Image (cartoon, rainbow, N blue to C red):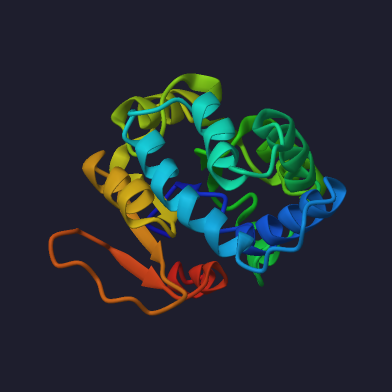
Length: 226
């Protein structure tokens, strides 16, 4: 294997975030007895698609994001967005569904290569999901952006990761993730090889270096010849 360490993104790479988000929203909407709104899932995804990249770029804080997205979503309902946010995050933490083959891959890699989970997700949610999934013992390091003050794709985030994993040689570390701007460009800009998880078969952007590409994280074992 050409790599001694693999850095794994969490949501969309190992965890089935779409299922978790949908389940948490359904439960929260029901618990607050809000009127049925079939478009709420699509609305929430659109709001997140605006706010999370702004967080990654350092334009807003995660604390602002956590409440602002529900301020927008709940506009006109009379509900307190901060209260709803807290409830939603509890529900999200209870949903630790993994993508197919993710657990088996990590078990195969365990002991063969160092592994770190690297995520921009909300710390209390990610820690709870990591524990519920049973994956935590398989990782040698867990780095969550809000706990270190830097978010992917910034170099400060990767500096913190490398400090945790013993400042390995960059050519021996592989970054695996589904987000082109955050995981792939962030890893490439830091001098790492990258593996893009591309389940929908989207075309590669011409201007971005991508060393490996798979449809699902479960295909990584074959790529690494394990």
